[in-house]
Length: 307
Length: 311
Image (cartoon, rainbow over all chains, first blue to last red; front, top):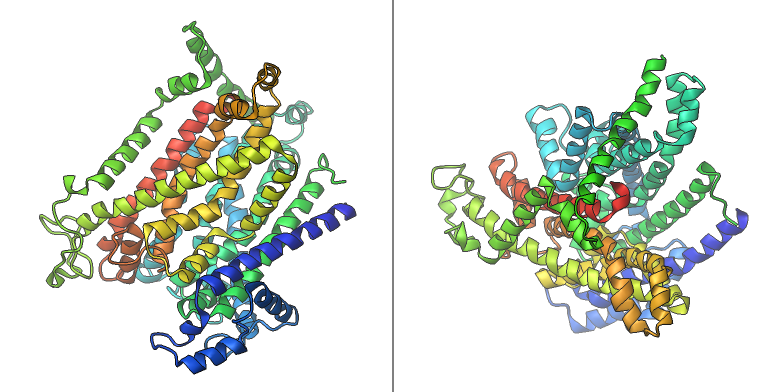
């Protein structure tokens, strides 16, 4: 196990460098960070040249990337458009998005797994068909449409929740945004749990448990659920990274000042340090989540042993 | 409660009884059928297949000739009609610029279909070729291609799209499709690689090689037809998700840009007016959702037909 972890961590290094370099390349080589600083006005050539020199923009791209990485590892992510340091933006944005992601994951676990177990046990019954149709609808309607519709219905029409979230973003204001963020994944969790449960109801060990005369509750919880939830847990684990990336849409709808909001502002104002900094951290979160999922897999399923 | 415990088992037994009828059906025809004939035979018995195929066919016709069902011009708008609700002759109402929502929804199909088809074809060709080659030859080629696809995997597609498209100042079908191809191919490459690795272990490949067939012939005549099924299934479903991705990117303001006519743009402008004119949101959002749903259902039906293990 220890050797496997080390090997995976070593494998992560080239992927991390590659992904961040790709983002760096897109922002610095395809875009023009200096022209962006001046907005619509044409910059004074001497000033522009001075800024280019200050930001090392005349060096070859790989050298710029090395300088940037060196700064990152010393905790310097650069300056955002309003003169604030990107690190302080991160300090205020990440807690909000992490809270939002937690709410979304809770929805996935509680509602997704409950619906999946229900439909998996009642395959072919009306409730199964109904829930399956519902998941198809949820998957095919884009998040930004469901987001606006739910915001309009719950926030404006019926006034059950506040339609936009205050800058502090406490948990109770994040319930509806969390649900919107989770919806598509929730549908996938439901379908995945359903398939997994349906497959395992035919397994020999389950027939044995029934034949032994174990109580129904024990069969479901100890035998059926334990084995069926392995793929679901791995799905939810990898989903953490996607949710934090997908938050850019949800945070825009509900005006939440989290990672997606700051990233969007950075893009809107063409502020390269904000964009590259936030995306770098998100890529890192995504990679670590994937690693943890692989390790968790070995813990949950003893048949899998990593050398 | 022993009665209840039994029902778990009974459920699966009931599900299994539908199997024999199908087998008997197949036995009636003595001519041996290939996987593709078999899949087609299966598909023709599914209403879901017909419904989704009809929706997609209709969509493609509308994308090519929008004038068939819409008489107006999506860019000819009268501000005096701004935000007017549905009326006779204009059943879907008007948007903020006074454009007819129905006409814009019909004309918006073209952008979505174009992005969907271009990016899916690009992803399928690039992913199938690279994944297929790395699965077939293995070795250093496989190692390098796998690491490269790992790198692209490290970037969540929506984030990458926002960064890439805002950097290149994109705003056309070409730039959006290019981006989707660029970030979408690794996923298909993995599927194709897995399918090719399974296929190349088969006896018929060994037989072909023993008869002196070269790599090209083995790959094209023997492996490709047998590894194609998962690629086709994934591509069909992906087409729907790519259309949805285009709309999301246009909604965020980095995909297509006005004066282009696209469902994403219309949904975005409708979302600003949702309190005054909810009718603006309904039609483009409905059209987009039905399109994505049609591709998902078609992909599901094709998968069920092509994968006998799931029957």
